[in-house]
Image (cartoon, rainbow over all chains, first blue to last red; front, side):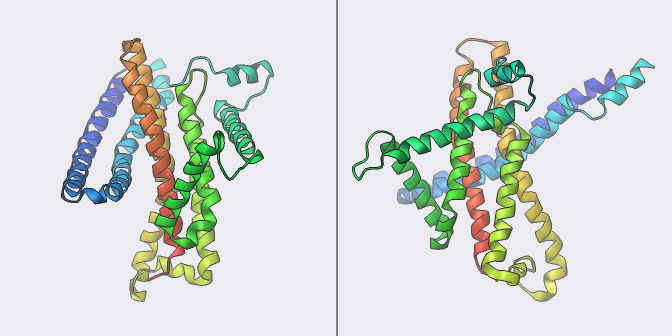
Length: 88
Length: 224
């Protein structure tokens, strides 16, 4: 049973660390974008497009962590082995 | 959100077939898009009215975006980009209707689209530059090639993976979040999350479209 507890902890901490870095990165990106728009409001359309692409790129890091967390929680390849070992 | 009752899955069950919901709902989206396209095509007028009024600015917008990102050479690839955009947007948005399953919340659908884009970039590259396309992989100076080729190959192989996982993670993650909110407080509280779902649907469509345009533009330009 300890195996599953550690799975939960791994998924939670992984997501936390992943979203920590992603949050910092996205904050920096938005900061620069807002500064750019404040200096030159005419370029807001172009800045918006580039910012959205950049945000999606950064966000995909958190998404990868999320996919790994989902694999750990719902599609763990070692579940069957552990359950067999527990049954013995 | 994955609704507990999916009507096409039920229909499939009645007919003793087994395709899986992502396939049947992909067909539904396809039928929907083809029907709307035929309806718009049937009476095109100089002075637009009804559906044509709605679709003219949308198609015009995509056309302008392609011109902006890929240049005049990219106009040929309008059908591919626009089809991907319409398909992803429709299948993201039907997720918000009860009884519908978004095909993009399944890895297989996204992998199919990402692999199509991946194959298209290289086919277009070879078509455009002939054998010289492989200079793209060799980097700026020829003696750097042994170092650059493995890096470039890994970079190119990461593209379909990241395209697939981004769309899948966003749609599936949004479903999981909605499900958890519904389990905790099944009243009012999930509503802002559903609003965010509409936003995510549009942004992810935009990002997928833009990235595939950038990839194709990358193989269109000359090697340096």
